[in-house]
Amino acid sequence: MSETAPSGRRRVVRRTIEVVVSIAVIVGIFVGVMPRIADYSDVWATISDMTWLELATLVLVGLWNLVTYWFVLVAVMPGLTYPQAAVSNQASTAISNTLPGGGALGVGVTYAMYSSWGFSGAEMTRSIVLSGIWNTFIKLGLPMIALPLVAIDEGVSGALVTASMIGVAMLVTAIVAFALMLRSDALATRVGRGAGRLVSGLRRLVRRPAVIDWGERARAFRAQTAGLLEKRWAWITVSAVVSHLSLYVVLLIALRHVGVSEAEVSWVRVLAAFAFVRLISALPITPGGVGVVELGYTAVLSIGQTDTTSAQIVAAVLVFRFITYFMPIPIGAASYLFWRRNRSWRVPPPDRSDASASLPAPEGGDPRGG
Image (cartoon, rainbow, N blue to C red; front, side, top):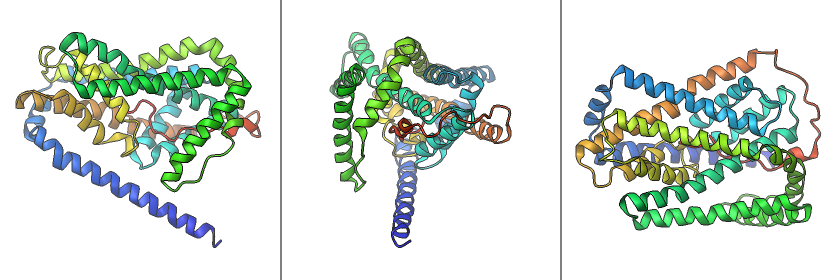
């Protein structure tokens, strides 16, 4: 008991610090920074001028954006139905969007739901890891697409080049490591051990314990994943790309509906901003990236714009975030309650003792971010 109590106090202190830092960042951005970019009264006037047809269109596109990620979940989890994908995704997203450290809690809820529907620990972990890997590949790959397009359209800034090159390097490294891991058991073990040493070193910097057995876990992951990827890699890739691009389309339509024209902010610049924010949204500073994501979009899109256009951009970003961040929360709460009460889908899991169920799972929130 003497060992458990200090550990519990440390968790409480760490969680308290996370909450305080998150609140400070959010308040600092929305109270201290955003008003310097655009006056909130002008922003509200812009939003108020939107027609019901424009708002309804955005809501429909936002709902489609939610649906597209269900395709990814079904692709990485053989046997999962689309209604089950909808319930699990919306519930975990709502938790990730509302609680500090909610990404880890969201993963826990996903495990609980999948387990109640009869999936084994190995199947659950494989699906979570694969969807996380493909989302990371796309986040790192977006700058590779955005940079040439921006170069053709309007030239390239030094900051964009730097961010894009970092993304390219990280993407190539990640793909090579992943390909090597799938090539053979021996390579998978070596890659897993190397990744474990790297992660352990990073965790020591923040006084967290080292990870263990990543070599064996990588070998087990390869054994259970190679066959699935051989059959479904194209489906997983296409569905993940469609899911991310649908999020971009919501942002683009929001900008056009508030009055930001193609001449003021081209679709190429919007794509570049989207690619940049994809990278910074991977940092779990606030739940769902609240504040950080809004500031990232606004800062990139409002460079060189008039006060009127800047107010329109802020309005579009806030509407976009309301649809993609806040709207899923009540849907997720209803999904969680449905899961708790619905017993017709529940079956015993085939094998809870599968050793490969202990594969490392990501601790992020919504895999696509804001």
